[in-house]
Image (cartoon, rainbow, N blue to C red; front, side, top):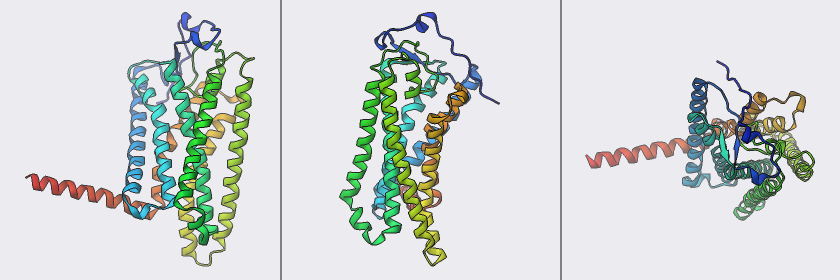
Length: 335
């Protein structure tokens, strides 16, 4: 069964040319399907992914917070990553599910602004955090004797705060700049949520130069972060290959591969979404790629980290069995 993407059909009143954004009271999001059966399929599919993300990230957050053995820099950053994943997927998926369930495509102007800001905030902060996590792995493997000094508790808090702050500043600048532009190309957004490229398509062609310049500056910063991650992992792999024992190499790789897999998934899908040539751009392709970088990673990240991390798996198992035992004891006492 394949999903179909209907052409955007908007009432005349909503399709009229608009001189500025204050004339718009709502936007029309792109529908996943035009039949009721496929709309419900989309709802249940997104519901399953969303519940998996809530369960996986919730378990990681609770486990790391409750188990003092996991109060280390690596798991502190992983806890922050799980919070950001929950935030990013909760920004886009519930609204899309509600629209499919109620056969609706509208999103109010204020909801679109909030969704635009929050998604940009969580995604930018997550990329900054992934860059910091690569530094954590570099210090742990290449400079293990200095790990406690370079990544003390205060330094970790400051780095995490910097990632969140960078995401907030990035989102604030793009939101203020984008929604200050006059939107004169209608109000139909060719995406299932409000994101920067799709809103810019609605602006007047001569008025989005500042936002394009801001996007170029952001792109340079992101590329700098990408180079930092690549250089860090080149150094990590060189250090790991110098470890004499096979068991030591395996242990070192097991702490790095989950982070590298998460970075690869995030960067590859996001880069393709924003850097693909306009000639191959189309609403069906755009929406599939957006799902890959905005919906899939938050659900997969907990699984990726849990599969290769025995300490985390043991802690999750201990948490679940402990809570189950407590529940059984309470029920037996009540009886």
